[in-house]
Image (cartoon, rainbow, N blue to C red):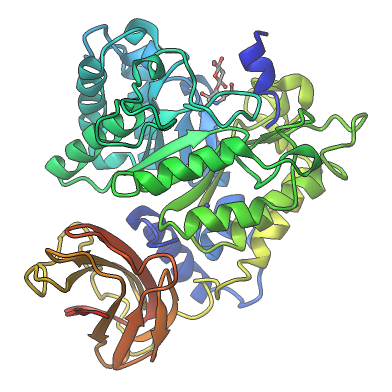
Length: 499
Ligand code: 9MR
């Protein structure tokens, strides 16, 4: 095992994505006919009740029934990596494994996470390619599966090991240039593979009218600190990247490969770290979870089942943490089999649940703390169950033309009896230092919670205003907030005022 892999031996809602909501809505429908207090018996059903997906990394030769039964999301463990599917000119090849996985996910009503587009490792024929070629590949890969891929890891593992907080220096990051020498790659004159790859991916998504969300994914970024209370500089660096490129980045993946490496332990500040990313307005996902079961070295905590509980709870307690994915089904089939880091034992389709499985299921069944779990409220008898969902892909027109103040648009994800609204506030031709948005809900609709905004009122005319960190918006730039409600919320007309 090389040092890179050894280092990796350790081991995130503004708006819930459409596909998650579809999963939730089906769970709600199931629940309304089940006894109110019945605990769910699969990870995917328990997660759906709490408003998140529970996924697994998979390969075409391991698509056993358990995949669709227990999991609601699938990440190709290796079949969408550039070394499988990219040609040296950024074309596609050998996509049959990836196609099999996407088809399997679709027929089992699972979300897909595309993994991954820009990565220093497993780059195959793309190794050493220019940004232009990377951009070609990004376009080809995103367009091949379109909105069938809910999330794409656009850039994977861009940050250096050993908690330095620096970017990697190998390709493709070796293409980076810090033009003004200020120590970062965020300035207009700088060259930044992360920024340029996300800009390209965003263009492709917008040009195709896709619902795909674009994520940045990394490991050892899970807590605010690492062992000994040392600040987690890698997590801080990731935070700076997301903050600077928020307009292109929709989601952040914490790989969460936990083990006893000092930078890979489970700390008590994982939830706070998830929260600060969520406060930037991105979804957060735990993307590659596995937890070392090596109890001879106890510095990652009190045992695997309890450690799994901790991580799952940290996600559940942050509304914008919309999914958890484990990096394989069973220990023996894991990339780290010796650490017995997963939820099942056994193999070849015959699996036994571990204590860790039962702990995760139990924790998921407890639901979220910070907001009411979506399974509880949104059954409004006045809404007929046949109400068609609003098409979330139809972008509503701006309600006010750009001015020196601000304008606002709203997009809706709806299900029978409930909705999540994402409101985008855009400054006019001058910067603003605060904003408020007023909108009037149709009768019967009620706001149950909001994020990235202060709120007054819950039905009829409701007022939202900026919170401390998102009041300042530069000319022409945007910020987003969201809210969840019960009932039906069509025809919302937000009115934005700069304050
Ligand atoms: O689990 C994957 C394993 O089968 C491959 O051999 C390995 C090659 O690097 O990649 C593993 O998956 C990695 C993922 O793509 C990115 N994060 C770390 C994962 C474990 O190494």
